[in-house]
Figure 1 (cartoon, rainbow, N blue to C red):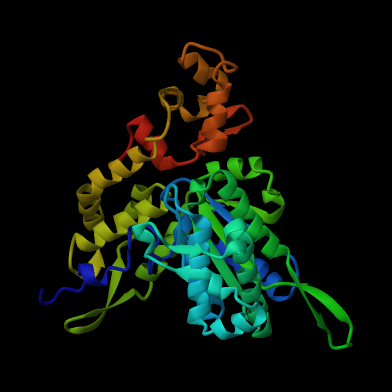
Figure 2 (spheres, rainbow, N blue to C red):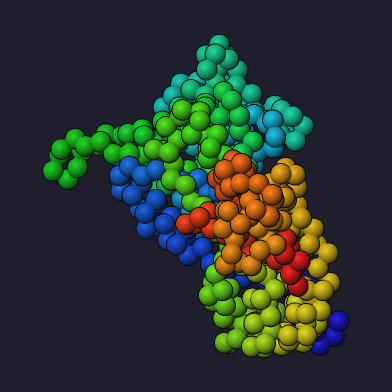
Length: 411
C-alpha cells in the first residue's frame, strides 16, 4: 500500500505465547534479579537458588524467561533450548534432549566424552518429541537411574562452562504438568546440580570450592508451588519463587515512551520513518489493557493495524480494541475455565460488592453462608489459582481485567 507507514509487517507489538516483543513493558526488577543476583553470584562461584516464575495464564512468564535467555545469549553464555512440557510428557527425556542440543551447538561432544566416558553414548535421539519419542536413555545404568545420567551431563556441561567463564542457563516451562516420581526426579536433578561444586586454587594457591555457573528457570501456573513443596524435594530451599503480578500503569507508560518522544523507527517502501502515539492514544491504550501484558500487546497491535499513518490516534486504539474485543473476552473467560462452580460463585459474589466492601464476611453473606463455610474456597482461589488476594480480611482481585469481566465492566 503506497504511502503506508504502519503495516502488519512492521508492528512492534506481538500478542502470543513465548515470543519476546519489541515493545517491552515492565519486569525490570525480575530482569535486574537475573543480571545482578542470579547470574553474578553463580559466575562468582557463590550459591544462589534457581528461580520459579509463576503466575496466571497470559501474565508473561514464558516471555520473561525467554527475554532473560536472550540477554544471557547476547552476553555469550550457554542457554539450553526451551523445554516446554505438555501434559504427560517425559521431562527427563526433554531435558536430556535440550542438554544434548546445547552440547552439540557448543561443539563440546568430544570434551564431554573424554570427561565422562560413555555418557553421551547413553543419550540417543530417536524421534521428534512431537511424535512421542524425544530422547531415550539406554544401557543398564540408564534404565535403572536415567535421572543420574541427566544430572552427570548437566554437571559436566557446567564444568566446561566454568573453564570458559560462561554461564549455563536451563529453562523449563509449563512445570505444572510435572507429577509424582517425575516431579521428584527433575527437581532433584536440578537442585543437586545447583549445589554441585568445583575445586580450584585461587591467586594465593589456596584450594577453594566454588559452585558451578548454573542458573535454572522454571515457569508455570501457581499450583506448581504447592505440588513441589508437597513432593519433599527441599524445593523452597533450592528455588526462589517469583510471583508475577499485573503490570503497573507506570510500566505501560514507560513502554510507550519511545512513541511519544522521537517515535518508533520503521522501514517503509519509501524509506525510514517514525511512528508516534498521540497522548490520548497512550491514555486509552493503558486504560484498555487493564495491566495485562497479553492485552497490552493485543491492544497495541490492533491499534497499530487500525490505520496506516505515522500517528496512532485514540480513534485507532478504539477501533482496534473493538476489532479485538471478542478475542479479549475469550482470553479472560479462559482464565475461569478451570474453576469449580463454587469458586465461580464466590468470585461473582465478591464482584457484586463495591471494592471497598469486599470483606470475607460480606462475600459469604452474599452467598447466604458464613466465611468459615467458604474458607477453603477462598483459600484455593488465593493460594492455588491466584485469582484473589486476601488482605486484612478483605478480598482483592489480582487482575483488574478479570475483575472488570466479572463486574460486567469490561470495556
